[in-house]
Length: 292
Image (cartoon, rainbow, N blue to C red):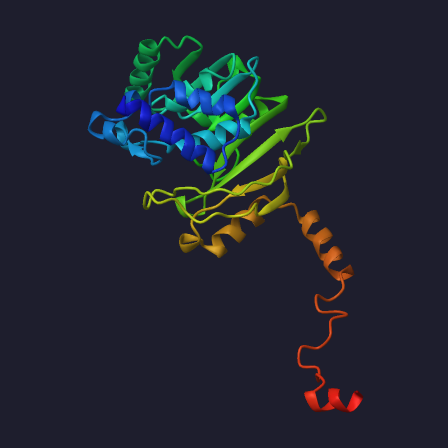
């Protein structure tokens, strides 16, 4: 009974933090998170925090799982590739929302443990494999959706190639935990890339504490060698390295975009044009009385 109440409280907390897709919330409700955490942390299974698992890895906090899953915009017919099985929790949530999940894990111990959990829960539409996640799973490509649970310096070309036309990939990019950004890439019919266009604000726990972080706006949309991408999230402002963020944006930005920005900036009027000077003389009470 206590565990059920904890589940309800977690779902309500996710709703308060902006998760609105009822199918996603229902999937999270159906997956017993306590089976995916170390027994020593079972009492914390339904707290919205990341927890340690085997091989020095972690199980993501429920909010991050819900956020990434919601932005995948899944359909029951979709075939999904997950990079980084971990405990299997994310794949278990996905299993309730799509036709089949293929998930790649580099640690055999984690893969075997995840398989046992899937069997225990009767999950039959998740297939795991040991391998290099950045290479994807070519024999099963193309995929409708790809979700990456480990950060990379840039989006691996192999994964982009294995994304179906009309597909979507969610991947965190960044060289350090403090400069990771979650990027959404949509692949269109002419093999260009666009973004969903939905601006979001949210908190993201960077692992330094379990209090969450400051809410940030979308950083923007940038032209890259892979097409348009939207930068959706960054680390806590206190740990926010502007130089690193600029370096990352420059590394993916197309020079043509910079030229266009420069042209637009030249055409824009000055920010204070047409505004009265702040120190302009104001009529005094005495002058007002004289006017009367």
